[in-house]
Length: 344
Image (cartoon, rainbow, N blue to C red):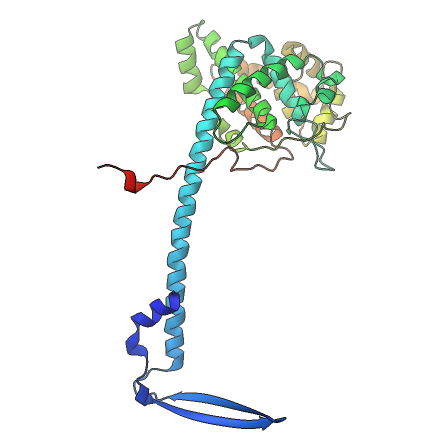
């Protein structure tokens, strides 16, 4: 197609038959006669074979550029469609999770610990474990470090059924569901704090949270959507029993995944049902106490920005450790419109 298109557009560049002379050279080798026919083009019109070849290559290049530009435009359009599909799906599941947690506020601490314990199994040396939903397996959720978390998992099982019922891009992965549930739990806690600071007025509290909160910090977390579920439980011995662990054991575990005292302090709400008791224990360590005090002061301010930003940043990193994110997850083909059937 390209060749025909090229030739049809440049007839004036082809020499007339009168400008050709034909030479025939024949040689005999081993009883086989080889003949080579050469065409000499007179240069009377100033057009050589090199000129024709150059024009030919240029035309092909322009055609390829045009085709590649069209391909890029189609690819960009498809990417925008997929982004919108994922965004709409995320908005829907956030609404479902928020409603579920609103009816079960007593399970919020367990939801946070569930997300932590599923993710902190990550092992840097073997690049295994992490937020892969393996905590859903009965042999893992029944381990001592996960005692008391079954109710939170059961709640998310029911939420998953609802989400899967309206998902157009396939069932949600447990790995995504568990981490998104932690996000929803944190948001609900932040909102509740804002409402308390407004004397219990929900409307003013919501306005305070949206105006001075850190909702915009969730952008990167929302992009890390498309985790893969593990097909078997993670190895034992990777998660401490937080309520029984010493501060040193907690620090060592956080250090093993690349976190320090600052991240340990900001994740205090994830380390058991009693955040105040956890922070009291953490404050006994000189390396951690300054961060505990920093976040306690931040929570007393109107916006508690320092605490929120650091918590969101830490959870975002934790919730993607060892995961290869599938950025096409939960997308689906768009039905084509038959223009011939449209009635104008």
